[in-house]
Length: 185
Image (cartoon, rainbow, N blue to C red; front, top):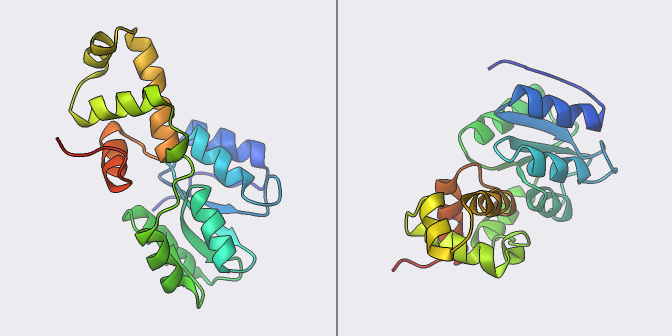
């Protein structure tokens, strides 16, 4: 594990994420707009980065907002080094970690009923492209099937990845299946 950057400036955090391509970022929700704005901005600009939110107090509302903003983990700002390490390891293993007494019940509830605000904002065209992605079509094949340019398909795919919080097409299709956005034929 290597620390590749640190800052208390939200704009510099976005630049560091873009330039250094970290696997995981620990992000204080006090940075940026004073809530979860930096998490959202990082999710949009660097969707492959696994985000761990550091919050003042771990409450169901703070956890839900952090997860909706793109975090895979939530840690109390007073957490010790062991708790931070566990959060990083959970994020690295594609897991979730939330500290605090309400954590396990809340995570279980959110996993059974995942928030899908971004997924629900897919346009009809993006839903159509997502269905074709799920069938295994490449961008040029999707373009030919829909009568649009491959560059347009790539633009839609980037938007789909961002809105589903996915780093790859495969991950987007997997999440789409879990969210019920596409069905097996």
